[in-house]
Image (cartoon, rainbow, N blue to C red):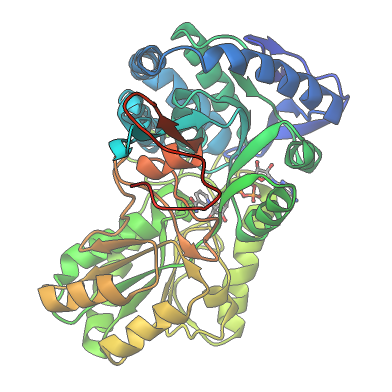
Length: 499
Ligand code: NAD
């Protein structure tokens, strides 16, 4: 059986801890590989070597580092299909969706080709007599990225691009459920000219993560995953004096106003609710039609579309709409939540519980489910289901729908479908959610903006990628310089204005 190790100092190396985790093929339920789980001793070595490599990397001028990003981007594009195949084999998502996963990561690398512009400092000449004031951005040193299973290329690239182009070294700890894509990206980065040791990919579980969080040399932690773990990691990293930005789970609502184009809204709900089997942090999991007429119009359109969805393995051809969920445990949890929705009185309009696929009976497939008449007290509303389940909460008025979203503890993404500019504008201004779509269901900002949720979807105060990421991965140093020619200034003990 294939054994997946780590990427340390520019080489694939086997794990030495003796601990492993199984990597499944979610479409068949078979174990296809096992991944090594790093010990604290292995992490110590990787961090120490990264710290040495970083000292040279930070001296490489920003434009040359950006050139590595340029080559990295070109090679990712060259290897797009290989990356997508490796990614789908472990994750289960369709190949077009896997290519999208790589593409949205590549777009962040493209912005990092312009990193020097983000790394510039500021300068004020003649801030006082003979005085110049300037600031510079310096890398932090060794930083860590800890990433989830659901975007095995995109999220590691969101971490690597800004951190490395800013002159840091990175310890990347991908999900142990989808470990291979990050290793492949590390190989590609080396081919692009990234010096050995600057990017170390360490596979592991909680033991590896805790070692990273407690490691004195690691200066910052960028995390993406579920909310309880995000909150835990934020607390532990911050307590150890590290910078931390930790992005968590979500419950994304889409408001559908009575004046919305119902055909477009229904299409959007199908893509955003069921794409990638609902395993996206920006998936729409709650539809909130305003008024019964809008709700009924949507149900009428959604049901036939849901019945036509084709669920299958990524090898099943171009017409497969979505694949299996990630593990047997994830499938059980989703089915349990659907059962709870029925027990708690929601109306299960489309039931995906008994879905089975010939030849893939042991795969982790869940058919698409649609609930109507969901209320905020129900578990299917309160929990992030992270599966192909769309819940409809009917609201009587726009204000009631807005309050529902405002009161929800998560704040990653949200969307409103309407033909009325005033309502859309009001919603975007008032809603307490980090990313808002107007007639756009999954508003993941482009790579030159920035990505981050509010409330329990994000802990820390800067976002991922875009200008925020360069601020997160650098420290500002400010220099006040004085040159004495022509200045007659005696000693003073007072703290005074520069005049
Ligand atoms: P997860 O929290 O289980 O795992 C994320 C990472 O944390 C993995 O690398 C894992 O090894 C590590 N980890 C898990 N348990 C740990 C523990 N007890 N202590 C220390 N480390 C631990 O998340 P997941 O299931 O891989 O990913 C799905 C979740 O990620 C969903 O909640 C989804 O909404 C969220 N997500 C959020 C964003 C975002 O940007 N907000 C993006 C993608 C996914």
